[in-house]
Length: 77
Image 1 (cartoon, rainbow, N blue to C red):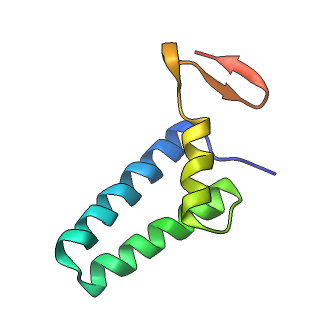
Image 2 (cartoon, one colour):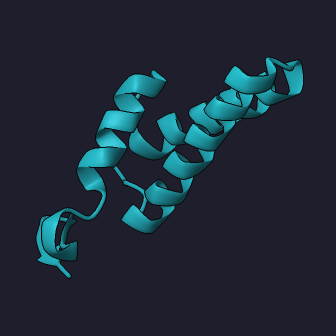
């Protein structure tokens, strides 16, 4: 399975979290639709079926201590 690059995942996670906050603050249908779209994209990008699992998978791929990340089985950073 192809996995999105960590930089792409980072952007998707930030977008989803921002929209989740916006929806919690405003409760508008537009904010909800945008949040759902971001959740769907995050799920597709991580090969998962629900947003909680997608977030977990994305966090595991984001840079860790020392700015290193595991990408396609090799450490880079």
